[in-house]
Amino acid sequence: MTQPQTLNEDDLYRTSSQYRLWSFSPESLAALRQKTHDLAIARAQQYAPDKTTLDCLTLEECLRLVQRYLDQIRTTNDHFKWPVTVKATAVQYLARFYLSNSPITYPPKEIYKTVLFLAGKTEGTHMKLSEYGRRISTPVEEIMAPEYKIMQALRFTLDVRQPYRGLKGVLMELLNLAGGKVGEVEGVVTDGAEALQEEMMSLEAPPNEAPTKWRMPAHGNVETKHITDRVNAAYASARTILDGPALLTDAYFLYTPSQLLLAALQIADPPLTSFYLRTKLPLHSDLRPKILATISACAELLGSYSPTQILSKDARAALEIKLEGCRDPSTRDLVGAHAVAKRGGGDDSEAEEKARRKKVAREKLARDGEDLFGPSLGGKG
Image (cartoon, rainbow, N blue to C red; front, top):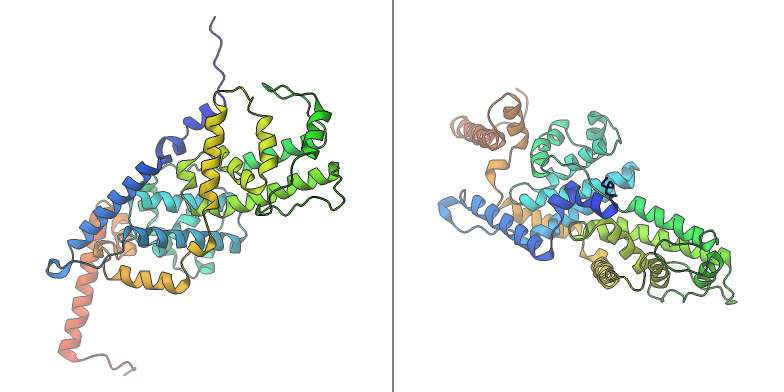
């Protein structure tokens, strides 16, 4: 009789929509973004007066503008005191949306609020739409208008695999090792719990540039309390990295959640992470060099992030002014398009075009009225 095959975490992750639809190599990710940008430019160019060449945002400017709103999601989520899972999900929704859409077609300032509300629903953090709109000073119609377009871009897959629970699991394992409670590690030869605990006590200090706040005791004698503090400090530092660089770079598109958490730990405290990996990866394993190289590459990406990369308020405003000069006019009235679609007026693209034509007609009517009767007196008769 054939024994049932046991699935490990990697096998399970490969069945997820995140792996199947949202995992890329750096080259394929860059190619997809370039294709999306080129299509958006071509579409916007169709509406240029006299077919003049538009001064559109470059791909790099588009990416930086999106990154600015990824950071805005983090700020808004923290203001609401919503869980970190909502924050990570919302950030990934926005990043995924702009793989098949361009800011030239859908400016992020019109999308990010809807994305955060959708992520709250996905992660079970409930707030009434009216209350949400009041707290972010946005009409509910503007929040709901792009929701279906977002769902289409997400391919109706709302699951976002995150590294936070895995990091918490590593914390528990390291604390047990620090307390001398673990002596046997599957697949790895050890000399027992006390030997592993003593090895942790004899680890090198984190390098000075490591972000962990833990430092060697002045007297030099490392005890159980000290390595427990070291583990907790590494965990806190890794959480900070997962909350910032991991969300504001392409890390989620390029690496798995377990690779992200181990890379964050490696940045936080390299000697401690190396010790932990020795308890997981046998020295003779053929996969060990590849796994360590992947973790190092991920750590390099996370370490390359700097808060100075985020656009300032003035720089963001300048890009949005430039964006208005080349924006696709067929998507200017998302609220109108959404209303047409709700009335059964065709699919989204048809609805957007109908809404655009109606808006142009209204503006022309207003101008014609002014030409005939003069401008409004501005007061009451």
